[in-house]
Amino acid sequence: MKKQVVCPHCGKPYSCYRNPTPTTDVVIHDPGRGVVIIRRLNEPLGYALPGGFIEEGEQAEKAAIREMKEETGLDVRLDGLLGVYSTPHRDPRQHTMSVVFVGHATNPDAIHGGDDAATAAFYPLDSLPEPIVFDHSRILADFALMLAGKRQLAPVEPPEQD
Image (cartoon, rainbow, N blue to C red):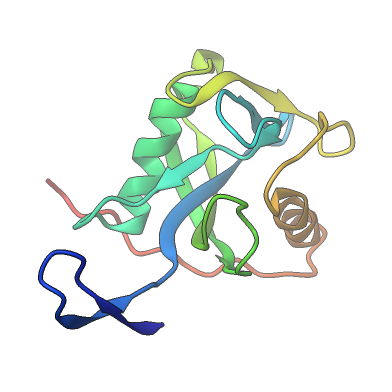
């Protein structure tokens, strides 16, 4: 959204854009263990899918893989795109737009909390910890629909090579 504001230093008007901040989350799934859920260290406190902010100049897929390593210790391969979630109040801190992937860990036994995650663990979909924050309950419900064959994953763009 374009907004006209006045510079507090020089008094001249200028245009300011207030766009949603891009983020990424991943539903890391292991058929025998469930999905990875983290316990957040920061507000809002509670449980969530691992994820975080996409950095300037960073591909969403690479950001997802990076955030999974930082928050869970897991090396993740992305299987598909579950969806894009952008309801303006999905994050109480600011308007975010999350690109949500489904993936699997190549090293599931290496799971541990890190960065913004106090803990990280696999949970069965029918036995998730509470409270689940943000709109992650909705994302997990969409994931359950995908597992039931009632929703499709979209293909992902391969991560750029460094």
